Image (cartoon, rainbow over all chains, first blue to last red; front, side, top):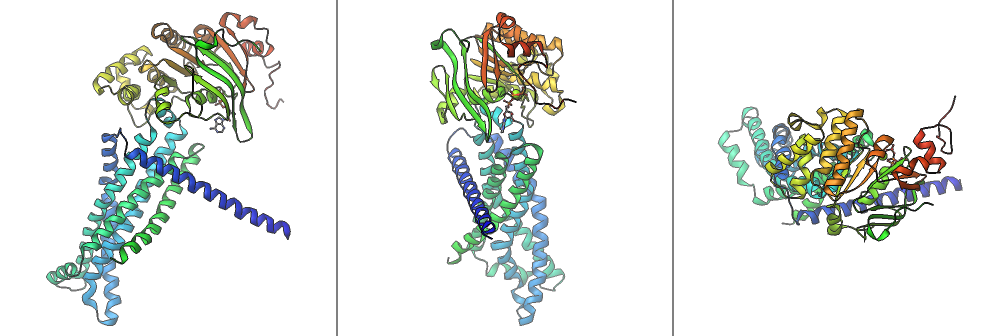
Length: 262
Length: 264
Ligand SMILES: Nc1ncnc2c1ncn2[C@@H]1O[C@H](COP(=O)(O)OP(=O)(O)OP(=O)(O)O)[C@@H](O)[C@H]1O
Ligand SMILES: [Mg+2]
């Protein structure tokens, strides 16, 4: 009984210690990366390439996600609000739901799966095949060359993606609203914009920037610290996606609360 | 213990009592080795004895647990930031695994240090890169390929061209001739000798290839159990009087070095 008790305590202690160590390592990694973001040299070619791969090539995935989400949202809100005869609110709730919540969160999660995984796999492979060591010996700082372009591209491109997602999502709602639910086109559009406030869109874009940073940070961090061949790279990829997703959802709550009183 | 170098003050690289362990596994256990300015030193030793780890400790890619490593008289253990960058500018390194960047073309790999490190224009750097590639027997058409399209020996030669492209003061070659045919191996030996003679570079090489060691080395050192157990001029390797060295250079399974293998 005593032995079981101490084992249990030891296990908790070990978990706590490894958690603290991981947090510390991540903090150091983030601080180092940020300090390299603001000191020269920066690599414009690499930044452009990352902006393309994060922004442009994510458009199909993000667009599909947004259109179906907008469509289903219109259906669900219609059926829900009909219970208290508030069907007129469909357009307004769709646009607020998309811009404040679903646009940024779903875009963030989709990009975490698409881009975060690819970053972890690429940087992880470079780590285990000594390419990162080779960078260092060729007078190139791996943080500046690999991490900084991805972080900046992530934080810049996600808001643009979310803006596109907002528009496509609202259009999805509009399609279902007018084609299936029988709303008049002009009044649906009126209702969409009548109660929409700047803060709805802005808070969503701020979230997007934070989510983009999180996705890139997790991809780079797990890739950079991967160990031990193909298996290690696989684990890094999984960890990058899972941790980015959880951090996105947590950050989403925190940012929403910060914006809530405004 | 044999003497390691005549004049310690002029040593380009000086390792003193270097220790490095991975968890419980002790890899370097008080290693001492000096490499003189313009000298070519070859380290030989069994597989897994810490030769690559030693090079990485000098470069700061691994951090020694203890001891001192000096480059041009300057302590580099624990060095970081700008100082580390300045010291690394002196080095070129051929990795055992070649470690080519697979997102770049072959010529961009070779030109990498020139473009990123020295700020040379892409066109000029490409010219230099193609010259260096020609020196290791790779034609212009290879330059446009990706590293994954090359054979193992070709990758090694690209890695070699990349290591010497910036004409660094100090070059580390980790098994430069492994995976090459004997003729190309000898071409590479000549190239390394030229680097030392013409560029005045200091080189520290690792090899299992005794013929290559005899050709490129001014001095040979043998590593065993994390220490340098013998070091001396190349022409004395056959009269080292050290049973470990004798066993190694004659490649005998019987002797003081026992491989941990299961014998039927
Ligand atoms: N990053 C690392 N983590 C843990 N152990 C390591 C690491 N790098 C090397 N080792 C261990 O250190 C020992 C020496 O490795 P090293 O690569 O220096 O051998 P080597 O002398 O270069 O051998 P070879 O001639 O086969 O290349 C090995 O036993 C290896 O298991
Ligand atoms: Mg090795």
